[in-house]
Amino acid sequence: MVDHAEESSNPVTFPQLPLSDELLTALATMNYTEATPVQAGAIPAAIEGRDLMVQSQTGTGKTAAFTIPMIERLKGEGNISAIALAPTRELARQVMEEAKRLSAHSPSFTVTCIYGGVSFDDQVEVIKQKPTLIVGTPGRVIDHLRRGTLKLDHVRCFVLDEADEMLSMGFAEELEQILRYLPTERQTLFFSATFPASVKRYAKKTLKDPLSLSFLTETSSADDLDHYYMLLPGVARGTHLKNLLRELNPESAIIFTNTRRDADRTAQMLTRAGLDADRLSGDMDQKERDRVMTKMKAKQIRFLVATDVAARGIDITQLSHVIHYQLPDNPEVYIHRSGRTGRAGAKGEVYSLASSQDLGVIYALKRFHNLVLTERPLPKAQAKSTKSASPSSSPSSSSSSSQAQAQAQAQAQAQAQAQAQALEETKSYLPLSTVKLKS
Image (cartoon, rainbow, N blue to C red; front, side, top):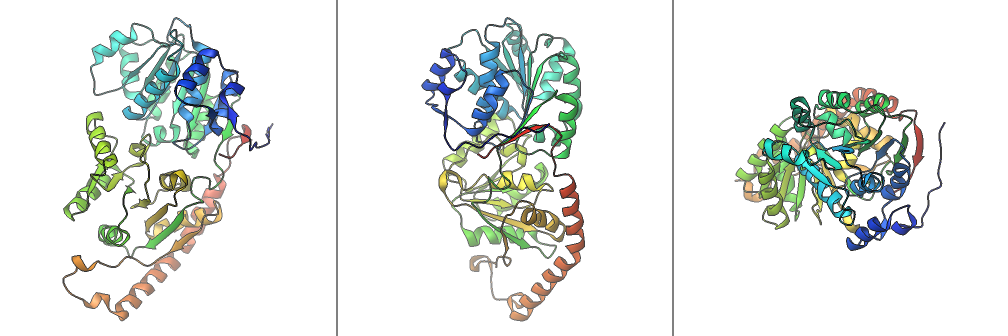
């Protein structure tokens, strides 16, 4: 059975939601007056105890969307009653801090955070105090479970935040192990920016009669942006990136790579070229991540090279450009990445360096997500980095380059059609009760 709800253009205030005076006081202290769409949609259903599968991008208030119902339902419980998993230490800490602020006037609700890289024994002492909510990363949670220092027998609510990144990072086995320690009778909440097939399969065997809430239209996080892509001839991707940055000369930009190794190499390459860059990847400790983010916010660096998971949970205002140094395989990941720019009403620009193998993703973005992606020529080398005019810049050479690009595009058309067909087949959601809302 599929349920449909009318989309309301009227904002929902927190006093309109079924919340206690303690929570309303905390929200007022935080200057939270109107609920975001994900909060207005998820909070009532979660308070009722429903299992949820919620799609909403980073920065839409989804942390409060699951912590507020937890506080309302579980305050006063004397055992560890909830556990929330996040893929990185930074995200786990952010969830903990938000939960602490929201429960500031509910003293019976306590929260702590456990993750790797810090003292295990100190965490054991905190766990012994039986906080209401434990927020953690899968690896450290498993460590405590195996050593018997953490018991989840009384957990009533299990939250998986950034579910897509959790599974893409290879945490599937750890999640399966954690599930074996959880009671069968519990509430389970999945929050994710995208719902690839891996998340849908995992949700199907984990959630019970879930309500599926989507707060993304097909292009809600990307349709107000200008999108461009450049077809690469197959070599010198790094050179084209440097030329693009010098040509655009953006005030700040985030550059996405698909792996941590590529993030490291790309940041080093840009630094050697005299471009103010640093990297952000999942293997960095918290002190190093904080150092990079402080430099970025202070405008001491202009270019942040990051992987998808490392970029989640960070907040950089007035980011004018997003550059896909490598395109992701999933079009929804492209949309989520691109949503990093164009915030607060500013017009953002998105550039992609694409090979012939990426044409399937580009085709899917145009056809299924109705995005307008404009092909543009590869950037030219800037004068300061060119010693003298060379034959490669002649009209005949440019013509040859255009012919090579056209040939590469023609050769990849069959592959693009096949990839697009595969994406069409995996586009449908699980057969869940579904409410489609716009953000």
